[in-house]
Image (cartoon, rainbow, N blue to C red; front, side):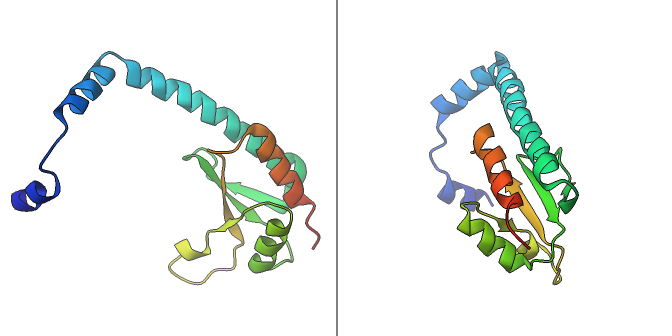
Length: 134
C-alpha cells in the first residue's frame, strides 16, 4: 500500500495543504458551507414550488432534502423514453433513474438537478415539461 501511495502521489503539495488548514481553522470553510447551503436551498425551494405549481398531482418528489438534486416520479401515460424525447424537443434535459436500479423498473423516476441552473431556468424548465402532451 505504501509503495502504491508513493507511486501515485509522490509530491504532496505542502503549501496548498497549509493554506487549506488555515482556511479551515480560521472558520472560512464553515462560512462558505453556510453560504452555499442557503444558496442551494433557495434553488431547491424554487424547483419544488415549480413542480408543485406546474405538475401538481402528475409528479411525486422523493427525497427532496438530499444533495443538489431531486428525485421526481412522473405519473403519466407516456413511456419513459417518450418523456425524455418530448422533454428534449422543448429544451429540457431529463436524466432517468432507471440505470441506477439493479432490476428493471418502470417507475418513470428522474433526477432533477438544480446546482447549475438559475431560478428562472428551473421554473421555465418545469413549465415546459408540464406542457408535454400525453
